[in-house]
Image (cartoon, rainbow, N blue to C red; front, side):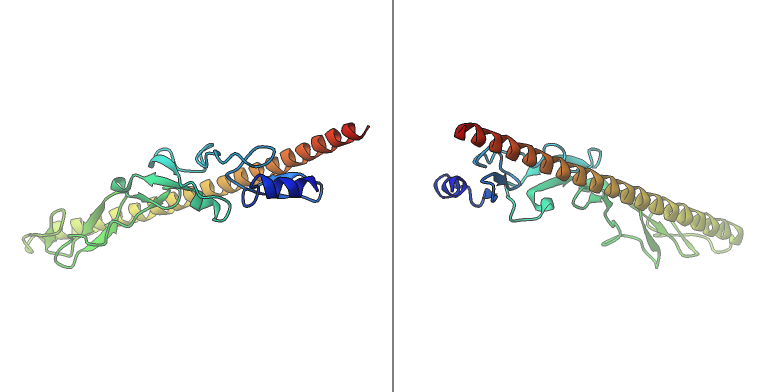
Amino acid sequence: MYGEYVALNFGLNPSGTCSPDDVCICNSGYSGIYCLNDDVNNCFPNPGCDPENSFFCEDTGKGDDVSAEERFRCDCKTHLGWSGTYCDEDADDCPGHSCANGATCNDLLGDYSCTCLPGWTGYFCDQDIDECTEGKLETERKRGEKKKERMTERKKERKKRARKKEGKRERERKKKKNSERGEIKIERIKRIEEERKEFL
């Protein structure tokens, strides 16, 4: 068959497969009638790297033998606290924190804060305060609780936005996949028409 000839003589495998209708079905990362072009850019269009949280997208050059996420790499702005495949995950900044005197570390976006125990103050809770000022201590405690509540709400909101963004990416991937199937079907019809004209 003609398709087998192409596969054997033009190096189709592993760049694609030959269908029963002698149509070349290209794997991801290859294009062309015979799937010989390996210049497909896995970073175009943008596979999902968050433009605000990443520097750039890098094409790893890997083909269809790996998952879609392994064909590109998003260079995240880790100094701002972003990580993950698409740079949309807030990295935990508390490991290795400097909160002192039994203070609690609170993860923020690209930073962290310390909730001090009574009797301590300062950014890292390393400054001793006068325990005699009981009213001031109570004010600091309530302020810390309110701050912690606000941070919890912000984290919930960020997770909600991340889930919404992931759902949008999944819909776009399905749309792209359906479009590629449509193109393959059109190409196959064109090929059949060409072969029919040759026999007429």
